Image (cartoon, rainbow, N blue to C red; front, top):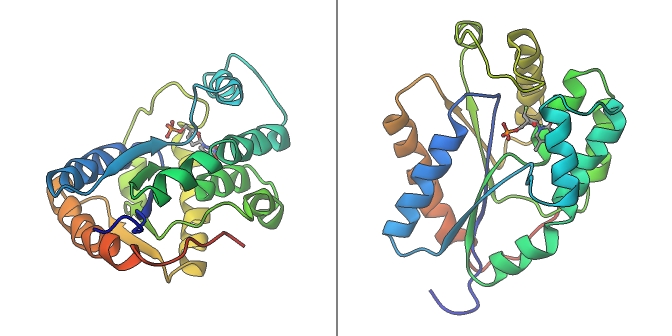
Length: 211
Ligand code: FDM
């Protein structure tokens, strides 16, 4: 690829334990094996000051009003925006585990207004593609014990899934809904097919913003 080619901005979304982390890893490995420069990222990015507050909240060692933590998650994306833009323009494809849509889905699932939740995301870079990993509803309830973090409860995850579905319907032109109940290998094959074409297609396109 020539020097002025940018990388693709790829995001994985979905409920907890749906397989995003595995799929991110498999995609990063694949792109590396094809000599495509690629970097993994994950939101929340817990190492910054804001990230540490988010971590305390998620691990239940700190309580904050729903609105405040929502804005912290958004601020955590904003504080990384220059870095993300720079990496993409240098030609790196970014494979990002969760982004603005998790921000909206988890907060709206608590009862906050959808449009209010989306407002602070406006102006952030827009992903070129979102892979939305989705399991059938019973699959979610059959997953049994979740971990110890704040949102890892079956009933809450069901509400989160509903908001993700709503976003998916609205953003259908760059969202790819994939059945997460299939094997990790089959799922990866679908992701890989779309992602490799995408990397070449967007290389000379301008970056876009969420609006
Ligand atoms: N989460 C994640 C949010 O509530 N808002 C956000 O903006 C983001 C990025 O944080 F339960 C929630 C989703 C999940 C929790 O995510 C931690 P990871 O992927 O398990 O670290």
